[in-house]
Length: 59
Image (cartoon, rainbow, N blue to C red; front, side, top):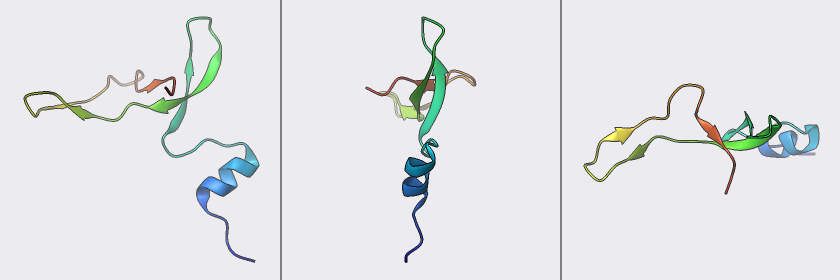
């Protein structure tokens, strides 16, 4: 038997992936979402999400 990857283990255990997190939607329900990564604006400066606001729904 081979060792399972982290993603395979998370899928079996119902855990979340590396780039996933939980957020609360507008109805107050806790849902699984995706982390917002830093991005570059048109000037080439890096924009970082506010702490606590780095999770949103996956599109």
